[in-house]
Length: 140
Length: 129
Image (cartoon, rainbow over all chains, first blue to last red):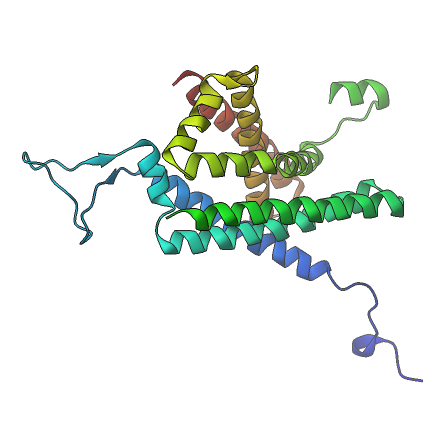
């Protein structure tokens, strides 16, 4: 019989404890970073630029400030922001799945209702993520 | 926690309250996810949809007044702030092994106070400016 103690002990279980603990923190950090980048871009003024990326000045030498929709849409226009937003959407999908699954495991103890709610959670999340990604790449 | 106090005589420590609020705020954001993506969609897609987005909050839509949507947005703002600060508290405790009773109590109180103060400030901005 093989020894089952010390460093040779066979550890049983689903093995997702550490993985979930780590993924929950990594995805959270990504979303926090995204929040920070978005807030900075919203708070900083943005200016009209020509095709060479130079800031456009009027006759008096003043820069032209962009506000409202143009500023908001301009934040999500660069490819790097689209990629970052995509990464955050996927992070959110996984983060919320781990969180909701933990909540359901704690409060819904019957297998049947829990399975129904877990399936609902997956459908809800995948649907929302698909919608958000569609919005992201519809933008010019 | 008064209702719970009255029934059980047990006072929840702030750490327990933050723990449950972390979950409550997460579930609120999960359930309101379609509303969040609707905001993302209409505010960003076109200039016309942006105006429709603004009108929903300023005037309302389908007989539902605009302030109701602002209130829902404010609930989301609070949920996000509490969830974010509570999460940062976790990261801080993981990184520094700050697991003492005193730190737990103080940081839990800070989490709740900061989320409420920031929510009030953003609420003033949302409703009055």
